[in-house]
Image 1 (cartoon, rainbow, N blue to C red):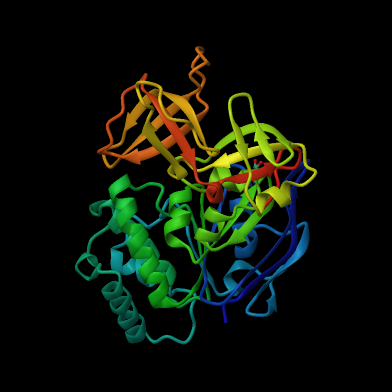
Image 2 (cartoon, rainbow, N blue to C red):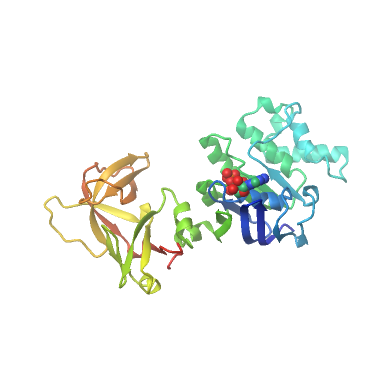
Length: 369
Ligand code: ATP
């Protein structure tokens, strides 16, 4: 079957360590998204699974068989890259059929039947006699998928397959790819630098940075319990707020914010001094500061001033500064519904539910939760 076991995998190119000591167990039929910023080692990892790069150290098993020295053709994998590399002089039918070229054991009729079957699944039956030049980007992408899936591989490897499509089509293809993956029930490793793709498509996400695996887990697990500051900042859009400060007897003290921790964070921060407060923009609540200045602020509330309002239609991103910070540096950004009207310059009360804050150790970046 298509289980992929990666143990202590390292790849060096001269002085560059592209991937360092990566271990990852991907169960059969899982849709795993490998995500991280440019240069973090995602493609190199995928290329090692495919057999296009040889590991410097470590091992790769697919379906229980050792793969390190096996050529790509003998790994029972299919790959889709961002440029679909269709043959322009061939029809769609010939392009898809080409995926079966190296496969023994098919009669000519069986090959034709298989192409028809795949075309039907991908809704490209009416395009079979066209050439790639006569297709839209989304249609070309589907043909590339068809060519890859036609021989029923154990493992599907995709490297940014949607990056050449416009935003609307990309969103449509995301859903479609996910449905197809479930229908074909094939173990899939999907590389992207786009956290939205990772969140919406995957069964699990593996986040990489600087060649190393930062965390692997279900999308909501990474969102609610990031293992470190990097994952907290990478997963979620708009990005998590970070405020640097110190832990003084269970209270966060920053230049402009004091925030008493509740249990269990209070206990977890224990003797750690340098800490970073992490708050998701959607976990910040805003209300207008009473104009007469009346009313006191609660433990988990503070006064701020709106510096910029960024309308996005369905929501507004509100940039906030401290009222005393006339330089106007942003301290936090919050998200409100698109119907909430606030103007720049308005004083607001910011409240953050103690259960929604994240705390990271400044020195290591590790979460203290
Ligand atoms: P991107 O999203 O930009 O494609 P990535 O996360 O896929 O990035 P990789 O392509 O795996 O990153 O590259 C990881 C590191 O290894 C980078 O520093 C890159 O420059 C380096 N690297 C990759 N391939 C080679 C190579 N053939 N020779 C030398 N260095 C390489």
